[in-house]
Length: 330
Ligand code: NAD
Ligand code: LMR
Image (cartoon, rainbow, N blue to C red):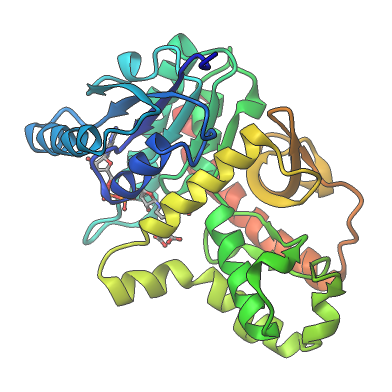
């Protein structure tokens, strides 16, 4: 018997990432090849954006995806998030000329406050929320705080693109296939302060750290390459990463829903106090997932270099959180 369709809400649906993301969701890449989906697409209340969204929907129709059981266009999160099982919060205000980081934080904080409240009011009580829009960790924190009637653990931020970038860099360095690498971790914020950590990683069962055996490469090539990859792509393409970001969003939600079979991945999740990260800070952690739930991998040794890197990215998240505290009534 066919499964009941899942409702997937996507914000910023007419944007760059949306254009790579929606077709893959409708193709069953995210929730499974036997799982029908209904797309509930949110764009800003602006004629140009809504018209562009209609165009994307026409193309979705023209793909005749067997799993696409329906789709609707919205300009109000209260209708877009109604009964949503999954919400991908992609739409956010990008940094414009003359804008300071603080201005971006504030503009987006307002968007994610409104959207968190709407999720709280109308989404499925089990909704799985992935925040992609930057600054992703802090936006996820804001949405979570704005939705007190939903479990905090339902709110996550996307570190998976950083995780995938780290895998590819390590594969290139070791000359091994990317698919053989396990136990990669990216700690912290989706920003250049993130700490991509291959100390526990193995490739085809061998220790990556032993194979590379080059702390200078780790500190001065690997970490800056992964940390600044987003900027390198903007520089090369004249636009920020879109297909790889959409791919990472698919990976994140697919693993959350369908499980990792004991393998590690990275998700930005509200801390439960693990590794000394204050509770509620949305932080990149190594996780395993099973039956639709993630668990932070416990008991990893944090050496002095790693602690310093973790403190750096945590300090940045604390600053971001302080910058929006007034909007959350804190
Ligand atoms: P884009 O500008 O092409 O598209 C964003 C879309 O969001 C636009 O169509 C805009 O109209 C819409 N939008 C803005 N505010 C909205 C709101 N309140 N409600 C609904 N829609 C809204 O941008 P993009 O390239 O698709 O990137 C989207 C976001 O994802 C950016 O913040 C970008 O920095 C971020 N990003 C994050 C990662 C990550 O790894 N976490 C990776 C790449 C990009
Ligand atoms: C990325 O990592 O590619 C995105 O977050 C875009 C950016 O602003 O770097």
